[in-house]
Image 1 (spheres, rainbow over the protein chains, first blue to last red):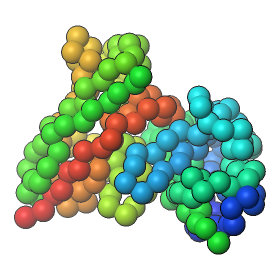
Image 2 (spheres, chains in turn blue, orange):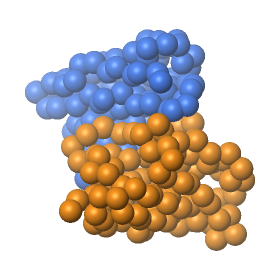
Image 3 (cartoon, rainbow over the protein chains, first blue to last red):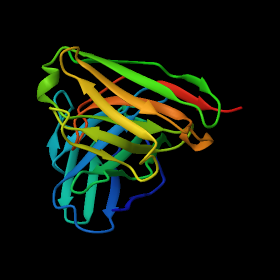
Length: 107
Length: 116
């Protein structure tokens, strides 16, 4: 099983600032990496797939990069609605596996 | 608009069984692989099972293998998850999701609580 490790566990950011979230895979997943956002009481929402392709309707301030074992999700200028938990997920191998999440909170 | 509506969750005793269903609409159901993803209270996400578009290929997480069966009825646009020999650690919100690589659509979730 591929283990996905996200860092940091919690990121404190002020509105308007840039947030950088990391995700590391225990072995290469090529570019088969997705990012999701989850707000309290809601189902997750797809942000990025293919490591860098934004899903339909996702604002341009969200961007993904990386390949192999190291990935990054960047939120260029945090809006109030972006404070949430973010998960990465690999789909290169079965079982599909998620990271443990990064909580982005208001500083 | 894609809609996925789960039903069948609830409280069940350890060792008991439960069948979740997911009614899909707004897309051509028979053209998509589907999956179930769960989330224990206050915890992260776990991919439980997936099934291809025809129902001919399935996969299961090791944590549920032998106890859970995924199936689909393309004539009724419905996905199912039969859960047997339930354990306390199966307590979670179960999401019906579209996709078996990445997930582009999620249901609202169905809570399954395993407790005596």
